[in-house]
Length: 88
Image (cartoon, rainbow, N blue to C red):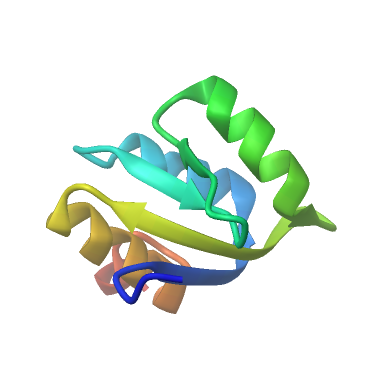
């Protein structure tokens, strides 16, 4: 896997999808096989996330962002479970 990928674990899917909607650029789900699905597309969200969900949470995912601000946003979401850690 390339070093610039953000690895997500145990992510709440509905909150993750809300966070994706607030991203400005393309966000790709990258599989271990190297497939890249653009998560800004609702169809790709359905296809990509269906395979990764275990018990209502994403078991493991690799994310690549075209926009550095989106990468920071998703990193904070992964770390704090919310797109705005100051709200807590």
